[in-house]
Image 1 (tube, protein in one colour):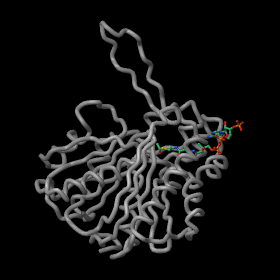
Image 2: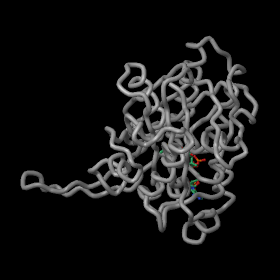
Image 3: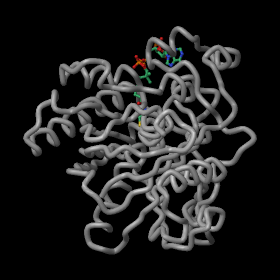
Image 4: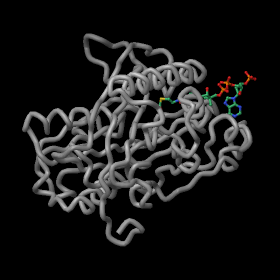
Length: 326
Ligand code: ACO
């Protein structure tokens, strides 16, 4: 499997740390030193579906694949206003697609989980062209009276078109149960047999625990993929890691003893956009012409569960209309 098209979309509204300090007991210096985040884009006028469609259309256009040639749509999403129908099915008609689709909740590792499944579908001949859309609105899970979580997240969408090819070399996915450290709970309807009313619980996070789990898990995944493929850290051209916190990325980089230039980041501008983050990074780097033919990339992400995913791939350049990479 290889990536042949990319897209991303962010909400228009840019929220700075100073704007947050206007209603939360926080400061620009606390947020930037603890996380590296300066701004985030938050949904205000647009819907998540609209963002997802914009990102998907860009991926379709850059791939040269017609919507009707898409065999499957996989939508990575943690939560949105609809429990049913799936977000994937909401996207089909506006995109001009009529293929099978499903939503996948792999938390922030959802894009890598989606890539792994797409790779299996392609390898077994179940599908040839697969559109993966990662669309997330974590700002809508947060309690905006709590500074511990709300400052960390941003909304966004990314999309990748994949097809048969020689790009992806290896995947490693893991899962474990650590519910208490990171969860968002929605209330369900009561029934005549179960009248215990559950309350919606905005995102609860034990930040320090998540930090440790994330660093440990990412290092293990990256080391395992390197070892499995008989590679050294030096053999990787770029490490594309989940954009949650600059200090998490720095800890992994220090373990690998690799230079900063190999760890591109955009969390400074967007905060943590959950499973959309690596796709947004790929789209930006590719459109800026920073992903060259034959580059070896290592993707790694972690998220609520605790689940993690890593992927090793060789990049093939994509030609975009009206960009530096044309
Ligand atoms: N502004 C100012 N002060 C704050 C803020 C804030 N926004 N948030 C917490 N504080 C305070 C705390 O109350 C605490 O005060 P105290 O010392 O008086 O008790 C102090 O800052 C230190 O708090 P810590 O939680 O120890 O700070 P830490 O250095 O661990 O940084 C952070 C917190 C940024 C959340 C860090 O733990 C982290 O990044 N964890 C991982 C988070 C993450 O990646 N989550 C998502 C992963 S999964 C996914 O992507 C969905």
